[in-house]
Amino acid sequence: MLLAPRLLISVVALTTLSGNIADWNATHIFSELWSPQARFHGAWFVIAMTLLSVVSLWLVWSGRRPIERAGLAILIQGAIWIAFFPAMLVPDTLLADPGKEVRPAGIDLNLLGAVANVILLATAWALLRRAGSAVRPA
Image 1 (spheres, rainbow, N blue to C red):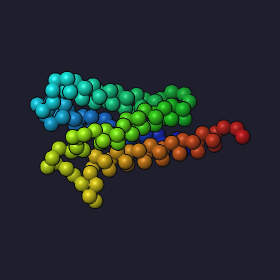
Image 2: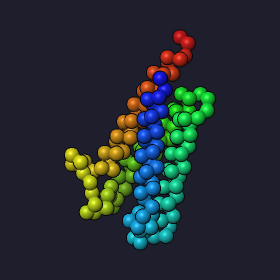
Image 3: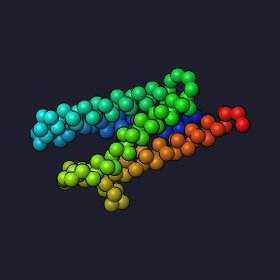
Image 4: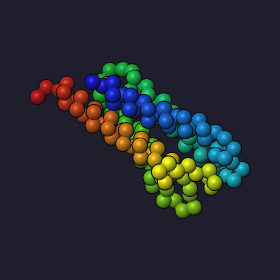
């Protein structure tokens, strides 16, 4: 009963981890266009997201009270991915480097991924709520 939401949360956390690994390159964390202080904040954020994703995976797959732990993992991953949307409103930001945009169906791949991850988390939340009501006495 809890396998589906656990898998959905894991997909989102692993997506976050893989994106963070990809950010350790000359166009992101090590970009010469960033000031040293901006590079520090970028690295800090990427490392924090990585650690929070590892914590999310640990919450989902270990310990007692799996419904509550999975719910906490959803909140952690949800905070990461929902923060994506207001970040798009910051002036002079782009979702992809110029000339390197990937737009399946005309939608930026980063935006598509963020929306998909939020949908996966919402689905996992709904499944957890259903599982929680099935195990609680009436």
